[in-house]
Length: 255
Image 1 (cartoon, one colour):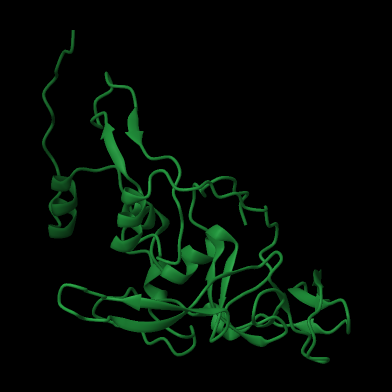
Image 2 (cartoon, helix red, strand yellow; image 1 turned 180 degrees about the vertical axis):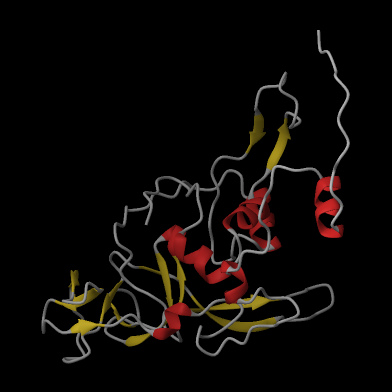
């Protein structure tokens, strides 16, 4: 994971992987460019006026809600993040909460927000929100119980699959060269769940069915369909039709 300071400047790798969008598309979705010089003009230097820092939230960067939040909240309190080297916890991991009212309870990670060092545990660390309240129409609103994020650095710990207790772990390599997480308590491998491969399009790579009308088949990517040649379009037509060039070009002078 990249190093983040006050307000992350770039979307996390896991977020890009989950979106299954090109990184350039995600960047265009959330960036706010107020002015820039026109492109394809060498006399103009590359310059633009744009927002440099963004406040990442539970709304994903390619959504309109994320863009609206960053347009409104220009002067909110600064956010400082502790740098995280190798990202430790993935979607589908069983963790134990170490702080708050649900301290000691275990649950499954349902969402990872890498830009803020956050994970959301399914059904735990919840709070009540009232949505749609309207006093003029005498409408009390709708009460919703939503899950609040937790910091991966201090608020949660991975659960050892053997002892079912929270444990520290470290990254190691197997004899086959695979990088795995190993529990410090039992020396047992904590595998990365299959749920971590889930994207917006599919739950697992194995069950994803290619749409032949829209998707590019994997075999077609490596197939060479065009071989460039140093000849004009007319030369290609003559070769296909079996026409031989027997004319002698006239002399020309360039000076």
